[in-house]
Length: 353
Image (cartoon, rainbow, N blue to C red):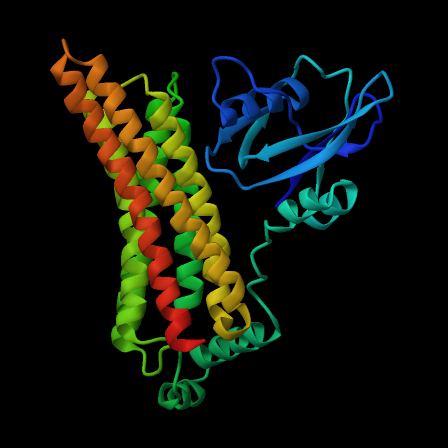
């Protein structure tokens, strides 16, 4: 995980792209516009704030003014070859730790450190167990002995693999909602991720049936993988609706909901590996699940706004309303499933931490 920082024009200190409100654009759209103008960053803006901070801006007159800044998550999908302020600033990608150290504002440091690297998968114990499994497959006596030993299956690895399909599917969905000429490519990407997720979910259910000792109650395992799989199923349903009705342009509210889904998938991908040590990670899991619930609530608000606007625009074109309503419904259900993921994780923390 990396964070893009840019240099300010006057003091050359490291900052995030930002600017004043832009007439005709909502706050997160203005932030995305500034990210392009100042850094050439292209991507997907989430309309739900990640935090706010303030700083003292020094004017040319020598006076200072306190400026309040709202910060939105922006998933960068590319950097343009040219952009308006290319020759006025430097841009660089930083690790989370280095980015937090590079900026001056304490509140901005905190916002950056709210992003976390997923924990490393293969620790020493995992590697030892993997070696043991390899030996067990090749030496019959050891394989027979291992069959008598309690095991916790591959549940954590499978959960994490499934969360990766959620991130990839959400990214393709957000690109799809941007419109353009590559819609079929994005639809194929979503279908591929949904198929991979189905295979992983099937493996989880098989492991539940044949594993002697599981890390959680069997109902909790099936419940968690079920709602995760429902989330990518709804992404797939959205893509199917777009393909079926040959939609080529999407409302701003649809793009906003897809941005929320990208952020929800990222949060989920951070939360899932923390299940390996519930007691140690209970506090962070509480923060992440609260974020998922906040995102779902904001998605509901945007859904209602978009549906109302669609109704007004479609008074003379009722089929346009029917098609748009179908897409809105699947986007809303996708966000709802991430709230279900939050509820399942909270239940695990309460029961097992």
